[in-house]
Image 1 (cartoon, rainbow, N blue to C red):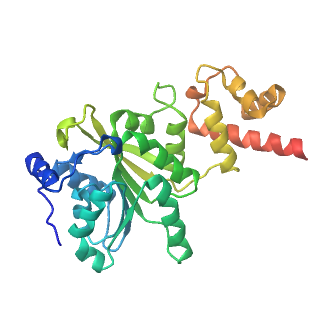
Image 2 (image 1 turned 90 degrees about the vertical axis):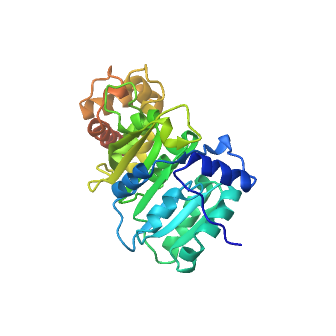
Image 3 (image 1 turned 180 degrees about the vertical axis):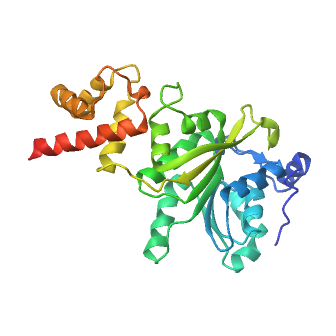
Length: 298
């Protein structure tokens, strides 16, 4: 039986609808609905979709953003972990599914996205052009890092995340939020904030503010000779933030003399901490490490 979706802008109607369906919000899934219609439109505007584009959405919930994006003529694949919501989404968007514009994938996106991606490529498709979602704290960093580390990048991505996560994504060298995750995001994408959202933009109202962040694929990626080495190296350098880059590098290389050789080749002060190094310097360090390691094997 077809079910009409609730008023996405009305907390009282959402509450009534949830109760009528026998649903309860599940904190473990980080479920909060964006009830600000203007914000939803601005987010999709930032995603910059065009008719016929392929788009992925994480965590559609009851489909407020899904409805907005489908109205713009895209081909959408949505990943939803809540089976009750999934059943409703199929009912809400059956017409789009019948046209081939809507596909729903149930389960944990961290376990399903790669399968969907590989199947798409194996069937002669290309990578989805757009990626977006209101990402709960517990998966935001994981899904972004996972796609980058598996060499999957989107032309544009727009994420709504907790303010602290957005600060890490956009952080610059020397700041307390600058981390291995900051480096990974900004290595693969140009990252910039789009807007701030207070708790009042959501229902139920969260205790923290959120930020919307735009990722645009860098055209000069990867800017290093050995991307796999770069990813491992930059993670190792931030493991102990209070230690010098030489100390962390020595642990990574399992050889203090080699670490010093790499730093000399990269013209980097061995006493500096990783949090002070720009991405350009980290890339330079990675190339120096690659050259030294290869020379040791020769």
